[in-house]
Amino acid sequence: MTNSEEEKRAMNFVMVVDDSEPDQFLSKYTIEQNSPDAEILQAYDGQEALEILDKLDKQPEVIFLDINMPRMNGHEFLKEYSQRNNCGSVVVMLSSSDQEKDKAASFQYACVKKYLTKPLNEDAVAEVDDLIKQSQ
Amino acid sequence: MTPEEKYDLLEKEFEKFVYITSHDLRAPLRQIGAFMDLFIKSIDVNLDENQALYKSMMMECVEDAQAIVDVLVEYARLHVSEQRIADISVDQCLHESLALLSDVIKEKNAKISIAKGADLTMHGDTALLKKAFFCLVDNALKFHKAQTPPQLSIHAYTAEEKTYIAFEDNGIGLAADKFEIASTILKQLHPKGDYAGRGAGLAFVKKIAHLHGGDVQVENKGTSGTTIIIALKAGA
Image (cartoon, rainbow over all chains, first blue to last red; front, side, top):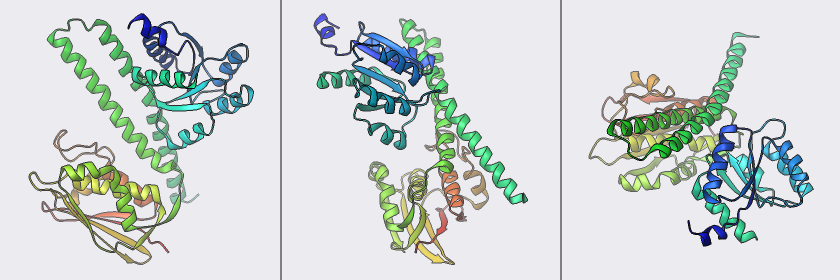
């Protein structure tokens, strides 16, 4: 990757919300392959994510959000987040299975721009990167 | 509680167990595959012949396990699916279920037609009914004789408030005494690799028929084609 290509990366500030440690690792690894300099925040459920996001002056460009999590799941997070921050970030759902019901429930929130099934791969991250560029 | 009620309760509990375990097994399997991939990439400079073989066999095992778990999840999900109950005609059900098979139909030069009863209706969860039709057509496309394009003739009739739909193909045949095994989830009659699939199609069809108070049976034709008849509640 050339320097000019790196400069074009839109993802500088990212959050991954997932209760699975292996999936956190794999998502972070894949994002870093695309955007080596991105700052990546990690939260292990929706509640923790909200607590972190509430303290930030600037919201991440993108939040990769798992659905099934203890304490506060992805859908509950979306409900709270869309009220609090008027959806300050682009949200990408990261589901373990491709289910129409989950998809429909996710896309009712304007901030949800993509629904991906795990594992996050480099092509999908590149697409998200393009998405962020378009929304900026 | 009557023995029947007890049986139903146990069956429901078991189905829930299968759904939860198979669903929860998916994530660690996927993660093993992903980490294995990363591990191999990190050392994949000059794999010797054996190492390359171990690598491909490991990946194959993971993919195999994932495919089995996927079938189990799909099977268990039949019970928990949100029912959208309506009447649907044989014609509509067939055509909507064919959408995902159009490439294979073209590739195999298959002929599929409704000989009788296209307008007859069935009553039930339309998504599941389409799934049953899909599996039956898919089987006809898979289990055909070499060098003979698959042909499937469908005819439907009603009797005693049920719509019977017969799927008659010109394939390799399914003996009646093998039907029980063939319709058991993940059981395959043929050696792995001879025919595509995981041994799920007929099990799905049988379960969907049972969920609708119906049944499935095979007409014994030995080795000259198969007729599978599915009985479902007739529409209004």
